[in-house]
Image (cartoon, rainbow, N blue to C red):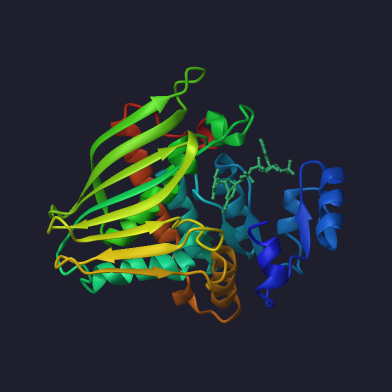
Length: 327
Ligand SMILES: NC(=O)C1=CN([C@@H]2O[C@H](COP(=O)(O)OP(=O)(O)OC[C@H]3O[C@@H](n4cnc5c(N)ncnc54)[C@H](OP(=O)(O)O)[C@@H]3O)[C@@H](O)[C@H]2O)C=CC1
Ligand SMILES: O=C1OC[C@@H](O)[C@H](O)[C@H]1O
C-alpha cells in the first residue's frame, strides 16, 4: 500500500499496472480490490514484462537482494523496502548491480522525504539551538503481536534492529550527517529464538571522533508505541524534539526548539503531504526525468546503513542476518 495509495491519489505519473504473488488466486483478489489491471503468476514474469518500467519490492528482508538484482538485470528501476537487505554484503552487491544497470535503486525510507525531518535537519545545520550539537536520541518502538509475522523470523531477515531499528539507524546518521561507530549495544533476544532481537539499544559516536554522540532505542515488543527524536546541544537547555518523525502525516507532527538562551518555539506540519506520496514522487522524478538528485535514500546510503546495523548486531553479541545464498 506504500505505493498503491499514493499512486492513486498523489502521484499521477505513477500507475500500478501489475502485481505478482506466490499464490495467484490471492493476487487476483488483491488486484480486483485495488483496481490493478494485470496479475502475473510469478515474480519472474512480472520483472520481465516489457510494459513495466519499475518494480516495488515489498518482500521479506531476506528476499530483497535476490529480487532487486533480478529486477535491475531485467532493466527495471527498483524501489526496495527497508531495510534494503539482510546484511551489508548483500547491500554492496545490490549497489554494484544498480551501478552496472544504470537504473535507479532507492530504499523506501519514506520519512526522509517529509518536510518535518528536513526541518529538523535544517535546525541542526543552521545552529538554531545556538549551541553546538552534542547528542541525538532516536526511538522507534511498537508491538508486533503475531508470532508468525515475518518480523520475528530469523530466516526472513527478522529482528527489531532490522524492522524498526533500521529507521533509527538511518535517522541518526541523517541528522548527524556522519557515519557512526558503536560504543555499546544491548539486545533483548527472543526466548524462542536467540538470534532474533525483541529490542535493541545502541550507544554510538561519530567515526570522526567528534564530541557528538547518539542513542538509538528500538523494540517490537513495546505495548506503548514510542516514536521520537530528542536532540541536545552542548548548552544544557538547548534542545530540538520531534514527535512521530516516522509518519507525521498520520498524527502528532510537532517540532519544538529551545535555544541556549531559553527561547521556545514550536512548529507543526499538519498540512504536509504523506511521506509515502513524497517518496514516490521523488522516485518518479528520478526515473522519469532522470533527476537522480531527488533520491535521498540511494544504494550507497543503504550500504552504510546496513553496515551500521551489522555492527550493532555484532557488538550486541548477536549474529548478523545471513545472506540467503549462505543458508
Ligand atoms: N514502508 C513501510 O511503511 C513498510 C515497510 N515494510 C517492509 O516491507 C517488507 C514486507 O513487509 P510486510 O508487507 O509487512 O510483510 P508481509 O508478510 O505482509 O508480506 C510479505 C510478502 O512477501 C511475499 N513472500 C515471498 N516469500 C515469502 C516467504 N518466504 N515468507 C513470507 N512471505 C513471502 C508474500 O507475498 P506472496 O505470498 O503474495 O507472494 C507476502 O505477502 C519488509 O521489508 C518490511 O520491512 C512493511 C510495512 C510497512
Ligand atoms: O513503518 C513501519 O512500521 C512498522 C514496521 O513493522 C514496518 O515494517 C515499518 O516499515
